[in-house]
Length: 593
Image (cartoon, rainbow, N blue to C red; front, side, top):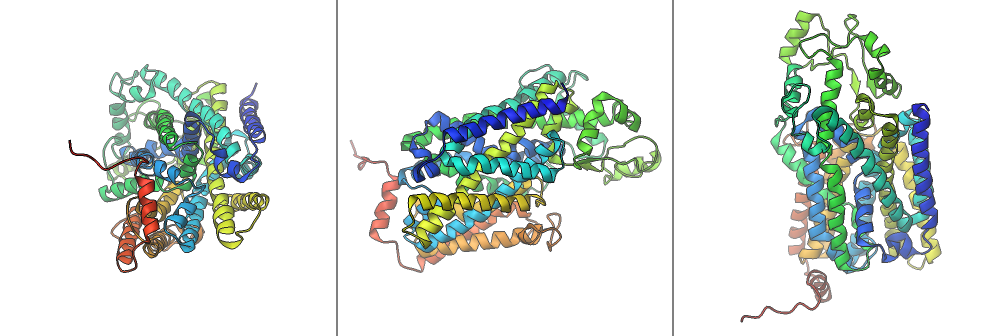
């Protein structure tokens, strides 16, 4: 059986399962559509939350970014994991106790302002659509490779699949679909990693193999990798080579952005009790850790495998020949991925070999001149393909490649569905029922939610054709927007007495400044070639657009507190509401004994 047929079997079987679950759990009421009837078990919710959280950015792109940068891109791991801890400790239980369907509804009621609710809706929609762009781009990459079509066609196929199970199932259908998707994606991520760890280190646990010894050299794996990449003019893999300020701000932006994105927060509205929200968060961390502890090993081992394939006799020997690439089965993956347009090479000096090295390194420029090289000949390696190509690079069995195909799609589709549900809830429940048509029937509200989701899919698909970066980088922009707008207002809503005017002013200030900063660097509305600056030459204090969310959050907090201090304090009933949300029921005054 050929690889294409195996891919179809794995992908087709997983999609049949997802759509079947969505039909079985089809939402029949607004409570089921928005919050799954508030009857989801904490373990089930934890698994669904993990699938919702581990998107195409985590599954496809993160390991690729770590592989080709090393230590500096561990900020993705630190930011996303730390942010989930913030969410679990500081927000999830209190928001569940408040008892509303959506984040925007909490903001509107807590700040006793329809305007605050409307601003929150707009911020959430724009941040969520930016996030979905990254997921749809990942869907295009996965479908493009494993169904052997171009990425545009793959993107369109993925959009149809998301529409089929997200629009009709609502939160109830999405929850149980995401449980199945988690099982698929975690198996697809860890099984190849175990194979590769055994090949390179003899250790079946990738996280331990990363710090083990390379069986080929007997040296520590990371030491071997450091030696190879530095020999080729690249930065030392395990060293901090970037800008510390940007790394700190980027990590902070991901952390507080995590705690402000609605598609994860909404999951905590689906459990029966406040205690269940805490348990859900704990279980989700366990399920997330299984992938996040494996990702650094996947990145490092893949980088070692790729580099050794281009220099099969070591960095002191000759580079791989074009003849070997075209005839050796171990290199079949290159021709396959070249067809997608995400991998490319060129024999620039006509010597019949492909030299892969850092052409910007002064030392390598001297060596290149002496050897007659005319530049790096691996002209294109899209970071988003690394995890999908990894089993092929390591020459793993065909069934593992098929499983990875299903896993990559599960990761992208699960998060896309959660985000689209957050968008549709914001439009139908917060905008229409909460603002424009308060007397709308439940049936009409459900119809509006499904129409909003369909429109969102169409917009995200169109923008996904030309994303503003790799999947993880695009997602980082969405986190920046959420960090600058939603996280501060949620924190102030729970833990402070900031009033409605302060909340609205803070949200607008943080969001607008951050969005403009991103557009200046990534293009207006992410349209290519409309940017005024690049992340290589940022506008303000060397801060990159992906790191600016933390600055936006500081602006939000500052403006909110200043405006609130200059205007009327919150009403007494709102003050009591804040106290009731934050303080456990039945808690009394401490006694001195």
